[in-house]
Structures are given as structure tokens and as C-alpha cells.
Image (cartoon, rainbow, N blue to C red):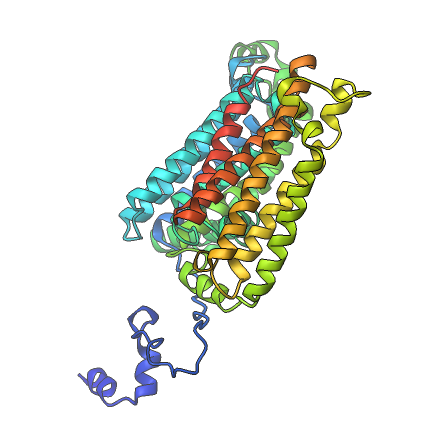
Length: 478
């Protein structure tokens, strides 16, 4: 009763301090007209650790990361148990690693939703299923040694797809879907989220063990840590004793050899300790990614707030856009008129005089690719920084359509060059990657033209196409 009376008699400032952040009214509409459109959202403290993120679950994550480390570094787990060498687990360890990682993440996010956390929408589940499928497909390609077509990029994309799946499945994408903030989301998934929560597993494990033993079993914390320290010191001596007994009695040694267990301290234990030491940072990174995403109730940043902030950055006049785009379009038109016979000779299989196939295919190919990158950058600047939106200015939109039409023609020309090269000299990983890059540029040009005519989720479709096409590329025999 007294507490209720004190709360009723409190001042408005005190009542505001006692009110949770999510219960405060929306004060943005009450701002004066002269106030800026974008107001930075107050920094929210990290969510408290849920009960399922502590205790034996954390102890299990340590064991899981150790098993994953064995598979990941190329030492199969069945060799440790059964003494089998060159088994199927050695070849399929990338797929096993992927399945364990996906199962672990799915379990964590399902438990979060069951314990009262936010549930993933059907759109998030569909997109996360796409990234999970791409990750599994790349792991199969690597296991079957088919990833040679993409070389090192196959492994890089494999890790990137897995990390992006975690951010998507947890609902932590900036706009709950792939969009204009894809680069920011990828940075969060691969770098910011796992390293910002790199020591999360240590904190949650210590907290869980303390709660488990001190509250349920009334064990003193000092006693617990002293016991664990004694066990850690006693384990090497235990294996030394086993080794000495095997040397002392041949029958005892034959008994242990029958189970194919090699307990020699000088070799096996050192290897296991080295692998366990390697598993610690690997597990900390993986758990920092999954656990950090599980602790967040919302995305990394409000997409609408970022869009409002981006609207304030529009400063390029319409006249400047028109002049710059006109200059580029005239330059490209003049280039196509002057070099038409040279550029389009690959379509008909005719080469300019004095050129071999290799010289003609290599000359100008990478320059055309850089031109495509510049065109997409120019379109992005016009779309994001123009004082008048591109679709609202007919002249600017027409020039952007012409720019993307030129980009599509550049892509076709570059592809004809690389196709002629492959036709005469067969496939190589570098030529396949070059062909994929040109196809992705062409798809981006088409989607840009479509979105200039009618708004749609062009960036999401572009990212999906690039990911799916690269996954298919990794299955190409080379």
C-alpha cells in the first residue's frame, strides 16, 4: 500500500524514470516542426541472460566446439575412438561441421522463442532456409572436392553464408530481410557480432555453473573452482599412471590395445590438448555469433531510422545529376560508335587483325569490369544523394536507364570475350569466376532497370541470385 501511494505521488520525471523503455509513449510526433526528422534511438542495454543460456548448455557448447574443431582441422573423431584412418568422416567433415552448426543455431533460436522471446516470421524463415541451403550445398561441394572451380572463394563464401544465416534466422537483420543494408548486415554477421560477444561463453558458463552448484547443491564457489583446478592437474598424472602400468604389464597393455585406445602421454595427450586449445577461440567465435544474436530482441539498427537519416543526406542538385549522367552517356555512346567493330567481333567469332584469341580476350576485359563497377557506384550515388528522388525526375531516370543499358551492353561484350577464350582454351577456375562475375553484373543491370521503372526488392533479388549462382558454380567440374 505504501509503495503504491509513493508511486502515485511521484513527480512526472520520477514516474518516467520508473517506467520501462518499451512502455514510454512515442514522443517523436510531439517534436516541434523545426526539429530534425531523425532522432537517434536511446541505447538499449543488453538483454539479461536467459536461463537456457547457462548451466549445462554452456558446458555442452564447450564439448561441441571441441568435436567441431577435430572435424574442422582434419582429424576425424572416429580416428580418436576406433583408430580408423582415411575414413569417410575425413572427406565429409565440412558437411558435418555445417549440419552441427545449423542444428545448434536452430535449437538455440527455437528455445529462445519458446522461452518468451520474439518468434521469427514466415518471411524470415523462408530467407533463412535459402541461406541454410546455400551453406549446405557449398559444404557438399567442398566435401566432394568440387570447389576447385571457385578456389579459395568457395571457403570464404561458405563461412559468410553460415554467418549471415545466423543473423537472418535470429531476426537481427536491419529490416528483417536482405535489402539496401546488406553490407552492414554482413559486417555485423562476420565481424561485429562474434567479436563483440567473444567472451560471452565464458561469462555465461561461469554464471551458469555458479547458479547450478551454489543454489541447488549449496556448494561454495571457492570449493567448486578448487575442485575443477585439482581435476585439471590430476588428469595428466592419471594418463602417466596408465602409461606406466601398460609398460609394467603386457597383459594390461594388450587389454587397452584391444579397445584401440592409445593413452601414451607424449603423443596422444599433447595432440588432444593442442586441438582443445584450438577449439577454444573457434567455439568463442561461434558462440559469440549465435549467443549474441539470441540476446538481441530487435535488429542491429532500425531500418526506418536509417532511411530517415539517409533522406537528410540528399544534397546533390538535379542539375548536377543531369550533367554528370549526360556526360557519361555521351562518352559511352561515342565509345560504342568508334569501337563497334572491335568490341562486337567476338559475337561473330571474328578477331581484329594482328590479335590472337588470348590477346583479344584479355585486352579490355578487366577494364570493362571496372567500368561496370563505376556505373553501379554512380547509380547508387544518384539514388541516395540526389535532392530529388530519381523516380520523381523523369530526365534523371531516363539517363539512369540509359546508363544501365550501357552497363548491360558492356556486360554482354565482356562475356563474349571470356566465352571466346573458354571456347578455344577450355575452362579454368579464373575464367569461370570471371564468367560468373560478368553474369552477376548483367543481372544487376537488368534488376536496376526494372526497379527504376517500378519499385521492387531489387537488392534482395540481386543478392539471392549472386549467392545461388555462386553455389551452382562450385559444382562445376574443372
